Length: 290
Figure 1 (cartoon, one colour):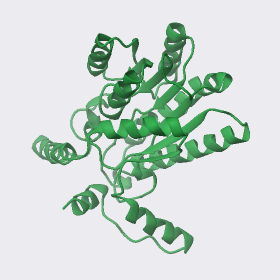
Figure 2 (cartoon, rainbow, N blue to C red):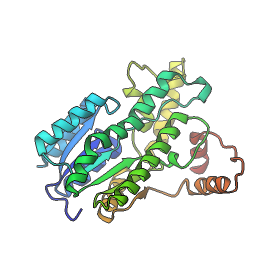
Figure 3 (cartoon, rainbow, N blue to C red):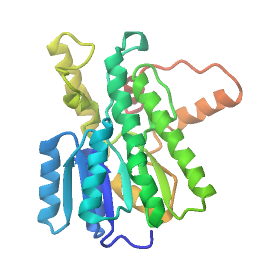
Figure 4 (tube, rainbow, N blue to C red):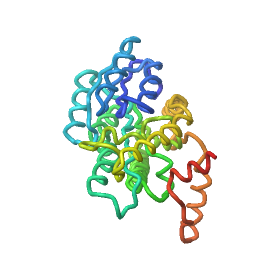
């Protein structure tokens, strides 16, 4: 993309965290915005904030896991602005931190629906349109979990690996088609967002999955919130994403916290060596961060 002024960005998961930071950065560049989120009060707050600053903003309550809901997002975006230039498939949930043997079908369906099908639906609804005019870029939010596989959070790891793979496949397809459209895969480490509290939006879900004791659940939530509050803000990540669009950069990393673990894993794969046993991502994070 040569310019951003008056171009249109669609952002899922725009009500908080990275999505909200993307919206603010794109608004600062003069873009028009189509913002989607399943959490309507948060979505309304961001729309009001940015429209109050003069940006043309359309808010569309959206469940990215639902094909019809994503179709409606596309219809609303095209009706309002006719053309979409940037697509950020950003909505995501962390899912329950449980061993695979203890996960329910509902656990898998929820995380797969948001983290993977949400991205698939985004490509289905918008990619052909963006390719048809050629002035655009797609950003898929994966995670450093796409390059690691710790104990626990298996659905999260599985979906983020899939988003990385999907993004790389699309990158190669765009190259084969000699398309001017770019694609980036964002692999955040630890960023101060509400991803660890994503059970708040789980359908018919009260409390933290797998924990029957409300006091224990709240204690864990408190510890997790304290940990994430100490991490980097989403704004530098949004700037990195913006620059990746400018430079047509595929990989976007936010820090080097997990680089050693990634290197070890790639060595294990190359040498056909058994993986080195690791604890949960939370345990590893606490260890790395002291």
